[in-house]
Image: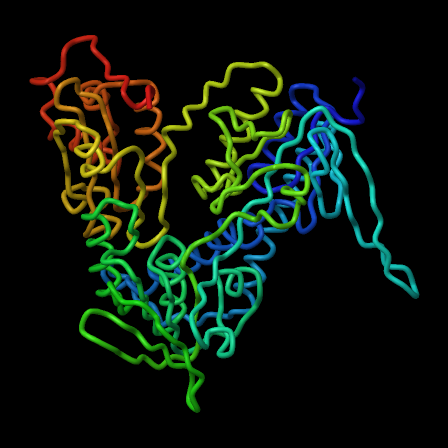
Length: 482
């Protein structure tokens, strides 16, 4: 059967545009449909704007701590308008770069709302504004395959009084140009919550983070989470763990959060509230159920090749309800296009690194010690403090560590957990080592340049004492099997 396109992709985030570029490289006639701005959530109102504002905060931090290096400075002033301009200029420049890459591969960029009609049919609804009226234009596309990549949006819990009092999400700070309040309560101590707290604190806001569970970053290594809590407290951020926001009220002098824990009720006054409890898959914009696609509460069910229950229809990234990470969506994209074109994918989607851009930075890949033991491993852990690393010490890194979790029987690296200067840059090397099935002995035997922060990885590998437990030539394969 002849189709108008070989592939139609709904959504232009880091899943959608990466899939379109790879499809174009493979010679597929490809259309990319986007209702909003090219680049999706990550580029326009999440990863990139966050990094722009975190970088500004890092500069502020270095200026304020310059006296420890013998450098005298005045207290810096922050021009919010110029900061927002820098953020927006960065986003626009990257949008232009993506558009150029797509055009270079012959991808048609189509504006409008993409709606799945069936396995090989997609409808585009776009609004056309004439001088006197507004009309909806409908375009029908036929295609060999479809990739669904609509992404996710912030989840807002049904807290009594929240809607009436008003609230921020991460979009408010990262996409709009708000005046900063004097006080902010952030509901949620996950990645978005702690990164937002870091930004706002650097910009002079008095921040309180409220988390329902008993640790920050609930899915991360517990020692890292506790070290971060202490670091944030030391910087002046208040942390309330194990508490639930039961109600929000609008008072005469601001907003009031009513918190509940095992000891009863506590009330905190604030000027603004940010909701940062997580994100949910966008499942209501593309006509999925009407097209015959069954959905789960958290996302679109897919198999190991990203195929949905509808023939020729794939789903990638946040809409699958799994990893809500830009690089995970990009990995899904490449794997899906490889499947569509009959190629073998070399991407190990069992090894997805996570990064948290707080101060200090945090990164991890693989299993925590608790997860490894629960999976039946007899583990051995190597750890090295960043305070003992020369380069980290020079850069002012006084907290954090590298922790490596290994299988005692084989020397296989089961997980890595880093906290400190440049932790988010270093995790890629360990991810590569794990994906290549290097043993802990081989990781520690590599020659690391001195002085660098990366030497902490070598020291942590040496701490495992892998030579006494590793059989020459024997590599563990359990992560690949899972």
